[in-house]
Each structure stands twice: as structure tokens, then as C-alpha cells.
Length: 635
Ligand code: GCB
Image 1 (tube, protein in one colour):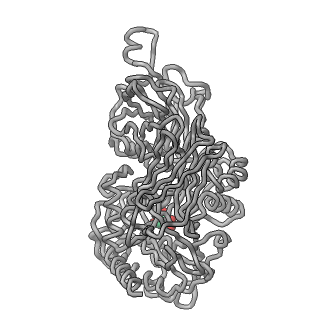
Image 2: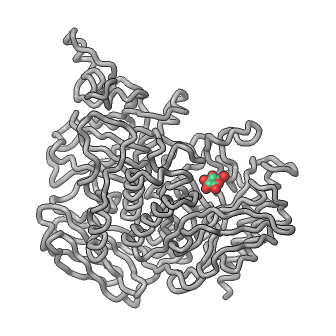
Image 3: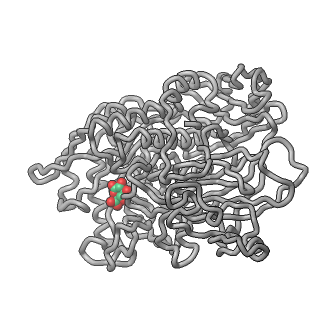
């Protein structure tokens, strides 16, 4: 629960700390390790770490598989033998050559190289289907002239990470899609340093997500690892936003020996905002002023971002932040007080190309999001089914796309397992705390297609409550299942999920005419029994098509295009529908999809193929969105 215990600052903090931290449970580990590795509990948040200086450890790393996890525990569960400790700070070859009693069953310095960030699935053909533990290692230089504090900051490690520096344990983290950091100031040495990271991709019934999903499990260090430098006392968290009552508000949390009673200053130069303040005994400061008249509110039409700075002694925290409000009034979603229809599409974190490795770069983020913004005339993206790279949410800020952000509480989760709940809460908190400054984020989603039971309802209500306490400026949702019934001539769809009461936006996944035998011509007449007091979005609908295949049958481009036409006609008849994110922009890898004629391990519901070829349905949706956009502009 370290993310929640830290850096919330101001008003939100007190309530949260009391209720959440007292309930904190150590996240479960998928593996029993006999090594002395603490979780990331007392680590900093380093919010907006990507804007700080430091050493980027991207590039070649050695890697080596460890399918029996011998580097984590001996075969009776004890501390591993010397000969198996992958993280030792030694020259293995030299040790053995100089002492004929020495024996090591690894040598990471001689292991093959791969370029990080990336998933090991693409490191070598024999790694393509590997799930389990992989050790990574590299060396890097640190100048003797360093100042202040240094942190190893991981953008993401899928799924569990075990981190060592110069042979010493640093910490471990669970959760494949959120950042974490460990302080290593005292462990670094001048000149050469050795970092070793074990990454275990194995999902279990207790993990989030569980083993059964509909996407590829890209194990590895899929986002940047950086050594981040800060002064001794630094801004660990700063949340700067426009509140619904028209104030620019900031919560700041300092970390370090001089955090208490410290002078801080919030500056937005372009707006002439300059507010001084003093932190309390815990290093927290809250400030707010009425938004200046000159403020240009961020929107998809005008995604204006401002340079924002927080000065605290030697530390100068900075970010690029857009200011806007998002709220619900009756059945409308209001952006900056005006009703908006969310013209979206869903997206997995997978770059366009024949052999994706889930390594998002600024260019791959732009290629994906640009296709939505410019190609589809969209204003919204659902980043499914887990937190995507911070490059994606930053690019959404820049391009002007509203974002649905979600945690992988997907299908069947161990609802009764307190450790699983702790993991999910930690993940949600890490996601929200990472991205609260992103104007693009409009909706936090807590789950996707989860079966209704008491245990599940209480699990998800806890997540909804956490999200509200961590961020009172955004909307909460979850992608829900609807019951499919047969009426005279058309399906009858009923939303009977008690979670509907807890969310701000109702979101439904519907696949009539693809997974059901409904005739497409019957879809527009579908009867909907859904609560009518809140905005509704279609969080998913879709049909597979192999690009280039044209026949009057499923899996053809023609059927997918007809399916879109019928489903959009159905959507037009829903009076409370306020947006949609059809499934999905791009064909994505999914091991459960093995029809050899059409799928070959890819879910083919993309509107573009894996290499970016647009299918017929792309143009159906693009025309629909363009017309909607024009109609809204004319109002
Ligand atoms: C769903 C899931 C999504 C799947 C999709 C499909 O409802 O939420 O993860 O990939 O359907 O293609 O079946």
C-alpha cells in the first residue's frame, strides 16, 4: 500500500490514510522467495519522474531464463545456494578459473543480450512462449560527483520484479503495468555498478490479472528503467488540477529530511500564477486560487498544456499540465461544462507491426493515437485492460484525446482473497497517482466483465471508493456484462448489475451478432433495459475480420463492416448513450485465438490489421464519427 501511504498531500490525504492504510495488506507474491527483499512499501512515488534528470538504462541487457526459480529459493525453499544466486556481484568465469572449488550454474555476463525496454517474447525464437522467471543484468557507470539522492525507477515490470544492485537486495514489486521506485543512494558506487532484475511473468489465480485473459502476456521490462536523481528533500508528489468549482488547486508532498515547514511555490508562468506556501509537519501543502480569466481550458479541439513548476528549496519539480473539468449532469457527460459525445475506440498496449513487444516509444504512441484522432475523427480512447505506458497518456494529452484508464481486474479474480484485493488497490493507486496530472484522463475504470457475486461487488466497491478518494475530479466506471434475452424479432438486453449504482458512467460490452446468433438486421430493434438516470457508453462491441478477406461470412471485412453498420444503428436508438469505444483499433496478439485460417494467435477485431492496414469497418466508423463531430460543431 505504499503508494497510498505517500504523497497525497492536503485534504484527500487525511481521510485516505485513515481508511486505506489501516487496511493495508502486503501484496501477495506469485513466488515464494527466500531472499531478503522488501516490497516497494517505503519507496517514493516520484510523480512525473519522466520529467526529471537521470541515467536511462535502456539498451542492451543480458538475460537468462530460470524456469524453476532457483535464483529465488533452493529446492527445499531455503536461501538459494551460492551457485544459483544470479545477482551476485562477481565475475563468475574468473572465480571458477581461479578456484577449482568454485561452481556457478549461471553467468549473466556471458548470457545472450536483448535490448530493453521490450518483452522477452521477442528476444529469441525460443523465448516466444516463455512464461516464468527471467533474470536481466547490465552494468552502468555513475560519476563520483553525484549529489543528493538516487532512485531506480521502473516504468513497468511484468509481472513481479526482484531488484538487486551490486549484489545487494533492493526490493520487489508486484503488478505488471504501474511504476515503482527504490532508493539506492547508499548502494551505488563510483564508476561501475551492476544491476540485476528478476522478472516473473507467471500469473496465478491470486494475481491481477489472473492467468486467463484475451491478450498476450508480455513478460519482461517493458518500460524504461532509469536512475533518477533528486535533491535530499524533493517534491515526491504534486497534483495540480482545475476543480469543478473553478479553482486551480495543488497538493504537494515533500520527501526528505527538510520536508516539514518548508517554503514551496506553485508557478504557472504563462498564466501569471505564483502561489507561495509552507508545508505542514508531514511535508504536505495544499494551495488553491481562482482560475485566471486567461486560462485556456484543455479539450480535444484545443489541447492546451501549460508548463507547471513547484519549487521547494533545491528541487524544481515540473510538468506539462492541461486544465479542464469533466463531470456528469443527469445523463450527460460534460467537458468544461458542455455536453460531449465520446467518439472512441479501445486499444491494447501493442505497437503497430508484425512482431510487437509492448515497447511503446513516442513514435509508436503517436502512430496508434494519431490513427484515432486523425483517421477515425475520434476524441476518446479506452486504454484497455491495464494501465498503459505514461508515454500513451502524455501523447493523449498532447493530441487531445480523452482517456478511459483501467486496472486489470478482468474476468475471474480471486474476489475472496484479501491479498488479491490489496494488490488491486495498490495497482489502482499507483495508476491514479501516476496520471492524476493528465488532462486527458476522464474516466478511471475498476473492472472489466466481472461476474456478479457478493464478494465481487464488495471488492469492486472498495476500488470505486479508493478511486473517489484519490481523485475527486474524474468519473468512475467499469465495463459491465449485460444479460442477453430473446424478444419478438430482436434481442432484449438487460443490465442487472448492482455495481451500476456505484459508478458515474454506465459502461457495457455487447457483441450481439458476433458471439450470438442474432441477425444483424435485428440489432437496431434491440430492447434495452438499462438504468436511464446516468450516461451510458458502449465500452466494447466488435467483430473479427482478417484484412483482405472478402466473403459473405464471419471473419470477412464485409461482415465486420455490416456488423458496425448494424451496431451503430442500434446505438443511435439509445437515448442515454453518450459515447463508445468499440473493440478495437488494431488486431492484437491473443493466445486463445487459434483459428488457423483467420486468427493465427491474433484477435482480429481490429479496425486495422497488426501492420496498420485499414479494414472496411474503419471507414464505417470514421464516417460515423465525422458526421457526429460535424453535427456537434453545428449545435
Ligand atoms: C471482451 C473482452 C475483451 C476481449 C473481447 C473479445 O468482452 O473485454 O478483452 O478481447 O471481448 O474479442 O472477445
